[in-house]
Length: 224
Image 1 (cartoon, helix red, strand yellow):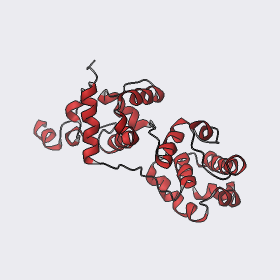
Image 2 (image 1 turned 45 degrees about the vertical axis):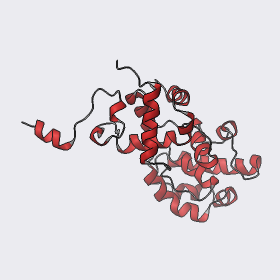
Image 3 (image 1 turned 60 degrees about the vertical axis):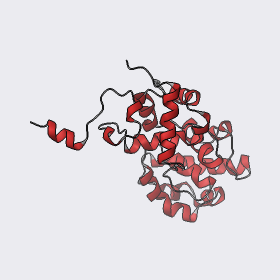
Image 4 (image 1 turned 90 degrees about the vertical axis):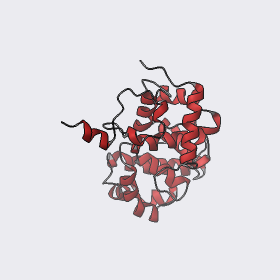
């Protein structure tokens, strides 16, 4: 098993990410903290592109908990029916909107405990909202980040929580705020599951993934 990157190498990895993309952002569309929360809840097992298409009209008419509750679960369901698990998600969006009204003065709370108490909100969703909405240095581990953490050796782990804890321990503090965006985007567009584009990878020299894929030219030359 390849040795994990050293502390100095991890510093260089995130220094490189920061040089190429100093202010990374998520790809979900939202207009305020409430719509950010709803968008992240809807994004579970769905693409950001698909969520954005579904929420464009929804957020135009329901951008507050009160408006979402007034819209009703049936109408919410019709707006998001193109998203996976839309029935359960519509129910959760309605219930979390009511919970925000009843328990938080219609405001999105800024603690993980309060967020996770809302219907449909798990640890990953809470971490995304805390990071994007409140500027907290949290790590939201999705399938892309889980893959990158293990492949690169930066944060190997058998569960999302293990990878999250490893990253919080190993990523230099000055890079923590943007770390999960860099790693998620890297996994989404470069370090892909089936055919990682290692020839375009800006951190390849520090990566511990043994099965690096060659570039298109090299693959053509290797063909009989």
